[in-house]
Length: 504
Image (cartoon, one colour):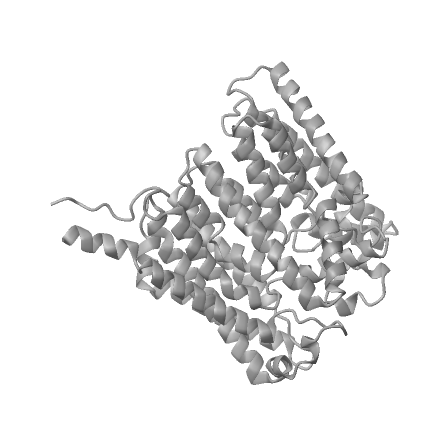
């Protein structure tokens, strides 16, 4: 009886309780988004003329209430995620179906939220609009068409080429066309696409984890159940889940020694976000034996390269965008964020050069190019490593180099790295706790940075209030919540029990 009591304490709340807690937390976030989420401003938007939603956004008390609701909802969802952790310590602690149902309950209310933590979804629609107007998003920014700002897009992409692949751009064009430019319909359809990406991640995370000898439930808990993932992919309507699902399916097919299917999956992922083309050599390494000769290594690379070229050529021909994404990949410096180390270095060096009479744009481009070349060198060194026993982990380090040496780093890029590192090997408990803390920290940062505050409110005051509130709530969760503290104090690894139960 004592053993059962201790086990029950370790498992925490029941599955129905965890499901409804996550549902309630997401419902709070959804209601809050009506006041501080990214609101469609397009003249075709029926919600922009709705008095109900305008009340949320124009009244100070309404905005403050929404900030409190969203902060509480994010912290509660994070607690629910952490409290679920003991159930995934062993593969038999929860079934795949039960875990999927749990994540479904956590996600369901987000289907009705305004975009949160990012407004990139409006840029997707703007680039689809450009393609529909026979303009190439790879050659011009979204400001090439009038009315782009009213569409809700971030000015970051006004004159920058699209960072997305041809498959996704054609999909965005199709959605813009059938939505007839009405943002609510466009966002809703893109959210359905995002949910399909999340479902793909859930399926292929389990499949790849099993092939790599990992606990599939823990991998899905760490990757898909992460509140930062759910709130970014579904709440923020991002396309990254499609990309991750494509990469994971490519590795899974590679472990099955199915190079045609693996390269097709990767080609689809590249056609969503081209940066994952860097994963291609590691797909080849999975197909090889553990100790291949150099000749065998180059032979398999030639094979996967040709297959990928064929698939990408077919996708390019069907979309009529061909390989326009290749030069666009290397012009992301036009949209550099000073938050990224390379973006900050490029900005500093180019402005110094400008003070000395140099060409600011040329110097910034040169700095960015040098770091991009350094990233490619690191990827090549990792691909040529002697120890290729874990190609997925090598791919994780390669993508880390590419992300950290890029001129623009979006907060959700960390989700790519978490996904690859979490599935590639059994992380230590200290690394797992670091993942929880880093995810929470990024959630705090994007929550404060991406508040949509109307111009008649003091933005800095609202963001300061939001920042102080959410930091205090997270600090209280980690410091004073008994169940959270007990779980974070516990396991020695993702498959170990939090506290060994002694038999009497």
